[in-house]
Length: 445
Image (cartoon, rainbow, N blue to C red):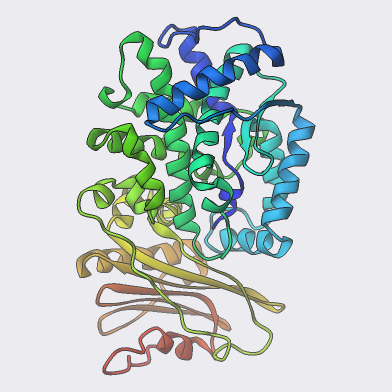
């Protein structure tokens, strides 16, 4: 699921956060005249730009990008343009239907319309990596504009190193978890570095902050507005993840390395949300995700079925799927130990969506715990299945509901999930997941 990576945007919540800290005296106001004119803002850019580059241990960055002030309607037009440039309508439709298939958003959710409404409401500032300009909203207060300027200047420095447009490009599709991890790296650094600049005059150091939970809670608490209020929980969490978890990841980085080593992370960035959630799996005992593949199911399915989406879910999104049925704490525990996954969503005019999923785990015990839990999730997600599971020797649960079949099966470190599969294709699809086994799995339907 990759739509979040359309562009690095600083939502209203971050500008409000820094303004709140300024207001209560937890952070000092930047040394500049409190004016909101474009000229006064542009005067801040060069010294801020040089200060940020020096903090990061980068060479003199040269001239900073210009500042542009835009209205909400102008921002909406820009976001719509970027959406059209990066995501054909079919890709947005596929993303939306995948979220519906996983139970993350309601069946009538309009992803594209909601995203445009959300960015119009929440996008307080952003760096345009194509036009090479920093954009500030015309409705920000002077304090918010200055704090937003710091944040976007970090993005401008990032763009000089790696080309942000390419770093979070959604093509080729199918690496949504990796893109979310990259977005967390980008936004986590931008939040952390801009905070570092504001903390230093007070003799404080971002690296030495003992606990980030209060900052993370403040970021989350600033997510307010009519559009945000009607967002499904998953969408809210998805928008927050790069800022809150990305900030924590960069904080862990600073416990180990100086700011000057940050550039190396962009040459070899985190490859999964697991590494963002558990920084030790990136910095200490590195654990990159396993490459999981799915067989071509077009020959197994009846005619009329088409592939909508083929992507990775990742530990963080998997915990979001589970949370809706088992609660947050249990979901996080069950998703820990993820090593790699792949899912596909298929659709036919007469039925759909069909979901197939394959996930690998660190140990068989973790895989078994997930399989047992997901069998329970299946009966909550589809209430007509409750109490109707058939079991086979080993760890396999199967259900039938009219012409559709459902499956959760564990073999070794892997678990396979089938949802709403045509009955006449179920066994053939199931067999395709275990081609490397010395003996074929016995039919369970």
